[in-house]
Length: 101
Image (cartoon, rainbow, N blue to C red; front, side, top):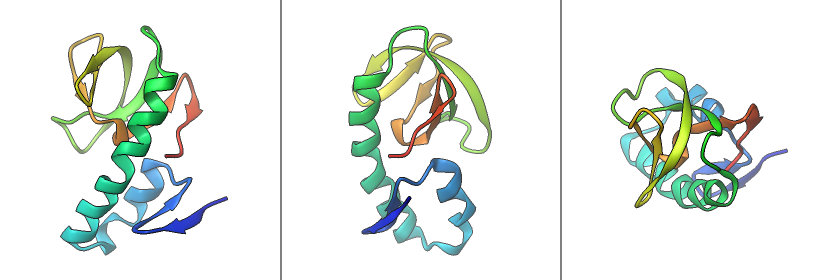
């Protein structure tokens, strides 16, 4: 179930947001991430443990989803075992459980 809150629907996955991405203006896109990031970070800080598997889009390659192994946090960024930086709002699932932030 999703409900409207500001620019996104509560309970949307990053894949659902990207399905509507082209219809959003640049300002709307910025607002979507500004709204989603703190919710996703709070959720994931309480959930992720070293070794957990995540499906996400990494910061340096904003086009392709991949699987990463969680290593730790660097400020507000998730760091994978291979050293990749991942924004919390770009995580789709953790250990095959879908993240709805």
